Length: 244
Image (tube, rainbow, N blue to C red; front, side, top):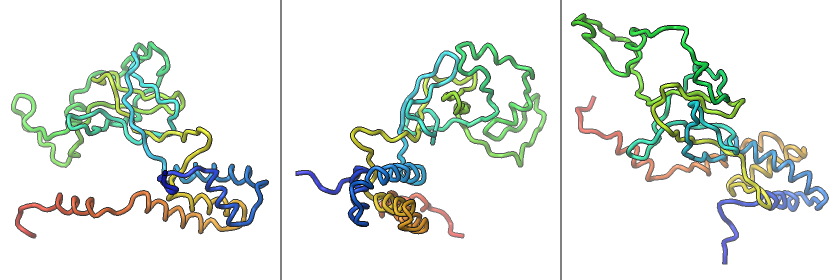
């Protein structure tokens, strides 16, 4: 026998809860279901859409096609030996010229030559005594972040555009996907009161303040405070050192 309360609930079930609460007839169902769908999208973008992770292969022109259910990206990187995603540098200065053309790389003709000084300043570690023993202090420069490639996202053409010297054949993409529908859409059960409050707001039976209050409750329930996580954070910050 299955449980009546699960992690997800059908959108039509939530609409049924609203109709029962306000003594509405089945003739109001279609209108309320459409309002509930709008609420699902709003709640999803605010708190509940969970990112998907996929490994994507590069095209020959150093671009990557975004998945068909892509809405927005949350992380782009490569996998480390520990199975962690090492993020790439997001460089919005990378050109997306002809990025949907298989011969894209042939259009990336440099107009500015190689600059040793710029490369030196971009190194992600402290450099001293560079070049025939000449002392070159670099105090005050940013510490830098070691990243294994650069990219930008062309939302118009649904492409990740990689730098021409990107050294790998794949990228790991974490992204928000559009909700899938079979016989109905599903939403997290902890968000059902927020959906009902959204319908009430749009039907002028409630206020936007009540909706945002229910939305805040849903966000807290989706990411509850767990004792294990608190203990881990406390232990990671403990160290054997002289107290200040």
